[in-house]
Length: 126
Image 1 (cartoon, rainbow, N blue to C red):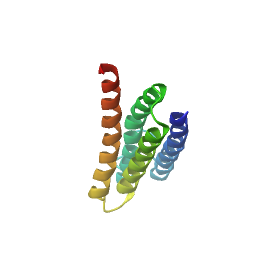
Image 2: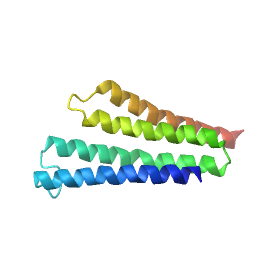
Image 3: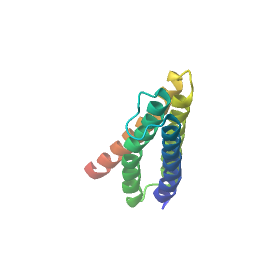
């Protein structure tokens, strides 16, 4: 259950991002929406972006694991996913909004999605 390990690890990051949003909501006294608070908007997008990509990646990895893909390959994809998502959080947390780091984070995320997607499609065509 390699995918389960990464699901657990990513779940912890998801909760940390959720708590970050809650803390900022309390500080900014905004219960719904973003209240035009730039820091809250950033935190909401970090959380939202994570929520948009991670479930799909875990589904792809889960299907690969069901097809008995090499554990090493699954770990490479899992570590790449975690690294990409942590880099994305770092890039958005930085006051200078480091575009190259953010671009690298998205490149890693897309690389996992594309590789896993192509692998699964090829596996069923061949």
